[in-house]
Length: 283
Image (cartoon, rainbow, N blue to C red; front, side, top):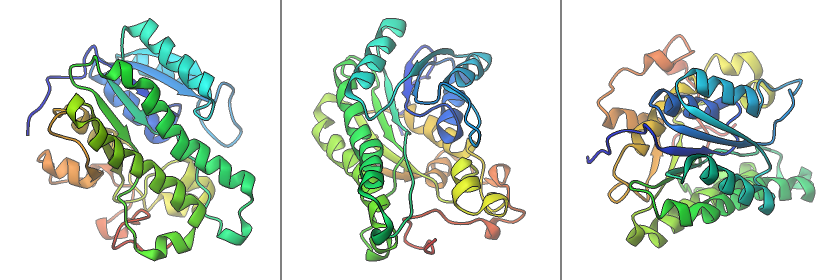
């Protein structure tokens, strides 16, 4: 598989990169010498969520990258346009867009308010479309441009729609962005891929929404997603596009047979599988 040389000196924009998987991906790119643009909403500390866009920027620079913290909302056209313009002003261009910002709500249909439905759609599907679209003129100028979206494979088994329709629609909307952009942009050499964890990942969503410390103990660390993302982003954008990767799949393609270093669970069989996978149980 063709590789580009490195992320060193390249500019990576990560939406919602102030914590969790987004921050782990940013730190992995920083260790490779990348420039990181970090548009995120969290300017002030949150009582239940660690980190702000400014602490994330400090961590990126400590890891060896250059950081641009940008306070903004991926739902707002003006904020996204400003984030893109600020990134180009600071670093001279954009090589990678990572659509990481996402909201989760597993409420069944009767209990979902339309305000909450709109939030899911606006952050997940619309935010992915808007950020990708706005960055395109700059990605076209890159030698190895990538759009990487953290969204699942398009599993049309009805159980996933039936379990939490509003959330499923919004996440599959992100994945449809990958499907459509990969085809639309193929002749321009801009890659569009999705990446999804094979197992649950120890993030604030697991701790606060999906079972607390007990669920976290059956998860992997965000670094598995960071290493998988790095592997994808250093592949040739003209030959690596239109894929719905899982983190395990990517790392095994890279020759990594032992993934135990990412595991918080005592045994591999104790890990919880993530949503939307064919063999995963319903939450």
